[in-house]
Each structure stands twice: as structure tokens, then as C-alpha cells.
Image (cartoon, rainbow, N blue to C red; front, side, top):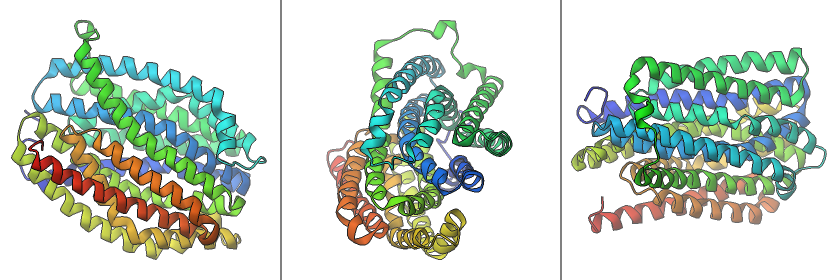
Amino acid sequence: MKGTLLEGNIRRQLVALALPLLVGNVLQQLYNTVDSLIIRTYLGTEAFSSVGIAGTVMNLFIFVLSGFCTGISVIFAQMYGRGDRRGFRREVFVATSLGAGITVLLSGVFMLLMRPVLHLINSPAELIPQVEAYLTVIIGGMLCTFFYNLCSGMLNAIGDTRAATFFLFVSVCANTALDVLFVGAFALGVAGAAWATVLSQLLSALCCLGYILRRDRELICTRRDLGFEHSLVKRTLTYGFSSALHMSSLYIGKIFVQGAVNTLGTQGIAAYTATMRIEGFANSFATSHGQAASVFLSQNHGAGNRARVNAGFRRAMELALGMGAALSVLMFLIARPGVTLFVGRNEAQALQYGVEYLCQIALFYTLCFTGNTFVGFFRGVGQIYVPVTATILHISVRAICSYLWVGSLGLRGVALATGVGWMVMTCYQISTVLLLRRRGKI
């Protein structure tokens, strides 16, 4: 079938899939980065720190939704790989209906719990009003985020990763222009930056949907495809919730880590916010590679091509090791200029904290890449709960050790805790692959 990944050079196909995903993930990081830089320029360090706290909480909900859509995209890819267009369309209806309902429910619950959550993570009292102003707009616009992630997941599942990336680029450009307009010209504060993000997500979702309709209308459900078949609903919820649990457990852990960082005060929060922006770009390489592996392996698993699945996993892991080593070196080199870009030269304590964090975390970055490749493999072959368990192990170790070490080591202790968490996760993933192969399940 045209557009599938069932034959051809595996390494070239993985790279071809990953490059647009990488660009897309980097562009996604620009949403927060542009917000942060514009807010720091116009509104100062306190507002910058407020967006850092809001970003940690916001990402929990964004990654629940994107995780749900990532799980659904595995179903899309498997159906596309075996040529089941009718099943693909029925899954579009089921996923859209269930996902929209879940999004509205989650948004309402968080609106009620926002203030207790901010107190739970030790948010400084003087920053809470700005954090709430930002989050109220972002959470209220979560339906836009869901629909973009679903449409993007459909495009990625059929191997058209370039289109979603292009529309995200358009969205980022719009976000930048609206940031300057709302925050700089209209003086709407941090809420203006949030409105820019929501409206840009809506634009991206509409562009993706219009492109899918023009590219292949057979992928969009019609009246004949409407209905909730029990087995498809169960599969959708299973894949969606397992992937959402994987992503949300990671960010729940990050919220607790943020709580440990918040004990360092505004300077520590500013430094951590800066390092998260930098590390977000580095993570984009690992995440994109894992997503590419998942798409490739899902299509071939759906087609029953076990030999190609195993060969694809080997090629993906080879690429992961090389990229991980390169990013480790790069993070050492850009630590000081990167942190300076976000916090400025005059914030000496924040600059020191940030440089120490990046130099420490760089020692472990190869594990980040291999871990994401394992996630793509397990999702692609239908072992969807393995990444959940691995992530819970990782984030539990990371959160506990962060609280234990932040007092004596500062942000360097938080970075060390992250590396130890990655080590535990990778050991579990390797042992699980060996066990499943021994049992003949993969």
C-alpha cells in the first residue's frame, strides 16, 4: 500500500520519519520558549518564574491528552498497515468522541483543583496570581490542544510526518506574532501569552483537518462509520489510557520535582525553568526518534512482519546510541551560554544553578535516548503497559532522590536524581525485552 513502511531501507525510513517529528517537537518547544522570552522581556523575572511553574502543571494535562492521542495513533498505524480503511474511519469517530469528552471532564476538574495543586507544590504566594491567570486560559482551551494532537497523530500514523510539522510551523509563527501583540502591545500580561498559545493550537488543528480532507477523504469517518462498537471502544480506551498514564505519570513526577526545586526560591525556580527549556530541545531528539520507531514498528506489526519489526528495533537502537552520545557532548558545551540566554548575566545564583544542572544531566543523556526507543518498540508491538511501569519506576526514583539531594546539592542533585531514574528504567526495559522474547511474545 502506498505510504506504508512495509518494505525498503529501514534506516532511511526511520530517519525520514524522525526528521519531521524532530522539527515538530522543536517547534512545540518554541511555544513555551517564545512565551518565556517575551514574558521575561516585558514583564520581568517574577512573571518568567510564574510561567515556569504554570508550565510544569500545564504539561501534565497537555501530555495526558497527547499521550491519549499517541496511544490512538498506534491503532491508526496498525489498521493502516494492514489496509483496514473502514476500521480506520470508525476509530476516528470513537477516538474523537471519547477524547473530547475526557478533555472537557479533565478541564473542569482542574479548574476546581488549581489552587490546592499550586499550594501542594510549594508555589511562592507572590507568584500564584500570575500562575492562575496563565493556567485558566490554557486549561480552558484544552479542546484545541486535543483536536490538534488527534489530527497530527492520524498524519503520523500513515507516515505523513511532514504535513503535521508544516502546520505546526505556521502555528508557532502565529503564536510568536500574537505573543508580541497581546503581551507587548496590548499589555495583557501572562494571560495574553496563554491566549496566544490557545489560538495558535486552534489554527494548527484546523489546518491539519483541512489537509487530511484534501489528501485522503477516505480516512475521515462518514455517517456509515458512526457508532460505538464495544471491542473498538475497549481497545481505544486501553491504548489511549495506557499511553496517557505513561505520559501523565512522568509529569506528575515532574510536578513533585518542581516542588523540590521551589524550595530553592525564585532564583532556583528561574534556573530550573531555563534548564527545562534547554533540555526540552534536547529531549525533542529522543522523543522524535521514539515516535518514529513506534510508527514504523506499528505498521509492520499490524502487517504481521515480525522479522522487519525486529530489524527495525535494532536499527532504531543503533541510531539512539549515536544521537545520545552527541547530545551529551553538546549539552556540556552550551550549558553556560544557554542558561544565560534565559536568565541573563546579572542573575548570578540562577546562572550557577542552571549550569550545574545541565553539566550533571549531560552525563546520562544516552539513557534518555535508549529509553525512548524502548518505549517506541513496546508501543509498536502492542506491549502498551510496559512503558507505563518503566516510567513510574523512573519518576518515583527521580522524585524521591530530588527531595533527598536538593538541600545539599541544589539543582545538581535534581539532575543526578534524574540520571539515576533513567538507569533504573533502562534496566527494567532490557530485562522485560529478554523476558518477553523468551516467552515468544515479541
